[in-house]
Length: 166
Image (cartoon, rainbow, N blue to C red; front, side, top):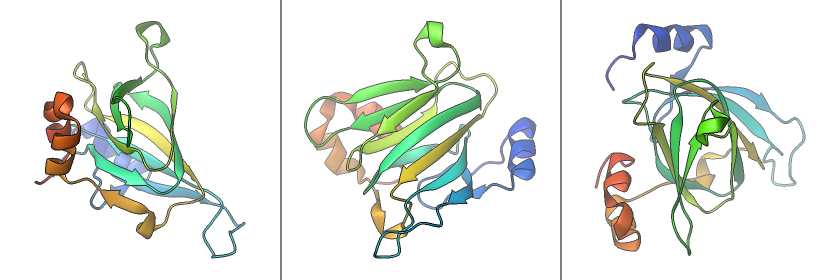
């Protein structure tokens, strides 16, 4: 992944962010609930999440609901591909008058991915993501581009931009 611009690099250093394997972007775990389910899974988790032009959130799905919270930086384009029904594109950001929203709820099982919006000028967006129940490696599935292309042909270009390999 190319080096982020100086402002993004400063955020990475200040928040002690690390590259997020497979999905992309940079993250730091900020909270894990002390309360757990009977199987040991935490009731909730939260992370800081930084997107850059090269560090997008590749299409993936989770086995738990997730909340995205916009903090600062460029607006973010977030694609959701439900198992049935139409695709949806949401715009996270601070400009409510332009239709951006500061928070987005993604139900479990929906393919999702995000990138900086086309009008990005700063080269970064700082968000947080909260999951309930909490994150587990086994609850994450990275999307395969060909399967999504066949299921959602109207969004092939966006799917291609939010996947890393075929």
